[in-house]
Length: 208
Image 1 (tube, helix red, strand yellow):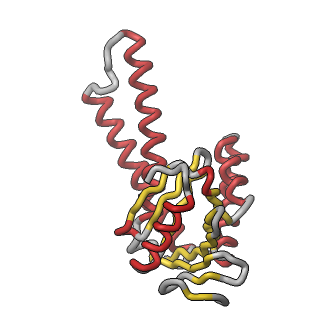
Image 2: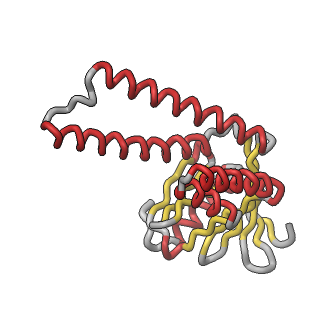
């Protein structure tokens, strides 16, 4: 990169943006897998709460937790977790077992940019998802696929950020806005501390 070297891997470029490239093994660093599990876990919890509510208001007794029903729920949960793990391994294999991303950061925002060669693969997977969703009549699946195809950049505008979460052991900073959940990665301790301090300073409305 052209410009001034700030830390081990972060450069201040002539256009005033900080840039760095981060690459990690998808098998050794579980941050993406944990994010996927969290999303599915929240969805599953919402469905379970709805089932409890329906069961409770039906006869004011919770029968969902009967021994037979509980076994079925546990089996279904185990199957879904297994599917998530297998799907993650397939995706990691398609990506060459590595996730590569370019970050751009200035005084107003930070951008998470998937590297071009991986974006082409992700674009193909997204199109498959969209087509499968359309053929199955699932508008949500089709919408998710089309949304993934629409771009390879996730931008967090600092004035909209409401929360910053440190995951130093995983070299990750979660940048959370009302309609945007972004993740920023930094390789070394020096890189990480610089990015964390910069984000804290430039996100006036964020709780850290």
